[in-house]
Length: 467
Ligand SMILES: Nc1nc2c(ncn2[C@@H]2O[C@H](COP(=O)(O)OP(=O)(O)OP(=O)(O)O)[C@@H](O)[C@H]2O)c(=O)[nH]1
Ligand SMILES: [Mg+2]
Image 1: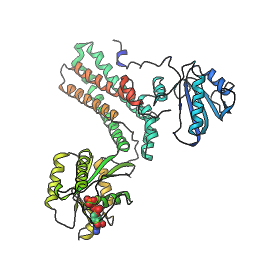
Image 2: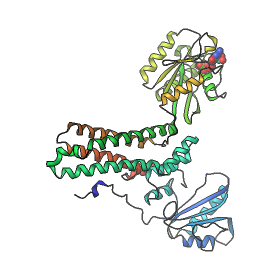
Image 3: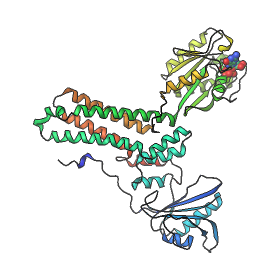
Image 4: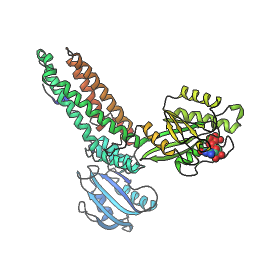
C-alpha cells in the first residue's frame, strides 16, 4: 500500500502574484521609517529609485530619487533576492526617516515606477501570508509574528518568541509523526485481515497510543498556560453599594483609578483596569453597586443594568460583602442571582476586616481582606491565579490561540475514541484507524498543513499593514 495518503497535501504554492509595498514601521513619527516591497522583477524599480544595482544583503547608503532626479530622502537600501528573504520573494527595504509625509512620498514614487510590474499596496498581513505560502513559516509561526508584535507582557513576548522559533510547531510535528507511524502499522494490518486480532499486541499499538496521548496532554497544558498569558481573565467585582468594590480595584491596581466615597452609589459606569499578576493580564472590572432599582436614580439604574451585563461576560466573579455587618438579605439575593446567571468561578470577598476582629485569610471559597490596609490582597492575587489554572514554572509555554486549543482538544478526543476502540479488542481496526486519521487532521490545521482559504483570510486580516 502506498503511504503517500498519510501525509498532508502541500498547500498550493504562490506563483505569479503582483509585488506589494507598505510602510513596515509603526504609523506616526520616528527616527527611522521602513518601506518594504516584496515581489519579483524589482530591478527596474531599484534602478529608477537608487540609480544603481544593489549588492544582495548589503546596506547601502544613498538618496532615494524622485522622477526628476531630486532626492525624496536619503537612507539605507537593502535588497534580499528570493528565496532568502522574509517572504521568500525578492524584497527591497528602504530605510529612511520616520515621518509620515516623507514615507508617503516614497511610497507614491515606488507605485509610480512600479505600475508596469503591477505594484500594489499590501493588505494587512500580506507579507507574512506570502512567507507562509512560500514555506518560510508555518501557520502557527505566522500567528506568532502577530502575537509577538501584540505582546503586552514580557512573559507573553517570550512565549510568542518560542512559537515563532518553531518550538510549538515542532512539538505538533512530533505528535503528527507519532500518529502517522501508528497509522502506517494499522493500515498495513488492514490489508491482511487475518492478522488483525494479533496486531494490537504485536505492535504494542495500545502502548504507542497511550504515549501519544500523554504527549498531547502535555502540549495542551503548555498551550493552555500560554493562552492565559495571551488573553488573561475578566474579573468582575460585584456586590451591594459601599462594600468597597472601587477600593478593592484601587488596591489591586495600586493606583487611584476609581472614585471612592462613603456615599452609596458612587460608581455609576463600569471601570476597567488591567493589572498583571506573574505576567497574566487580569482585566478587573469595577461596577455600580447592586441594589433595588426603586432605591436608585436613573443614572444608577443604567449602571446596575451594565453591571449585570458585565457579570454575564465575566471569567471570574468576586462577590464583595462588608465584613463589619452580618450578610444582608440583599447579599443573599445577589448571590442567588449570580449563581443563576453565571457558571464561572465565584468567590465571596469579605472586605473591611480592619474594622473587625477578623484577620485576613482564605477560608474555603471565602476571602477576608481589607482594601484599605491591603491585608489579604496577596491572598486574593494568589487565589485569582489558582482560579485561572496558572501553575508558574520555568517550563516553556506557548502563546496558543483559541483555534490551537480547539484543534488540540479535538485531537485528544479522537485519540480517546481510538483508545476505546483498542480496548474493545475485536474487529474494530478500521474505526481505530479512522480516529487516528481525524486526530492527525486536527493537528495539521495548527501548522497549516491543512487549512481552508477562509481560515487564512481570517488569520492574516488581523495583522497590521506592513507585516
Ligand atoms: N475601613 C475600611 N473602609 C473601607 C474599606 N474599603 C472601602 N472602605 C470604605 O467604604 C466606603 C465605600 O467604598 P467604595 O470603594 O466606594 O465602595 P463601592 O463598593 O465601590 O461603592 P459603590 O460605588 O457606591 O457601589 C468608603 O468610605 C471607603 O473608604 C476597607 O477595607 N476598610
Ligand atoms: Mg464604587
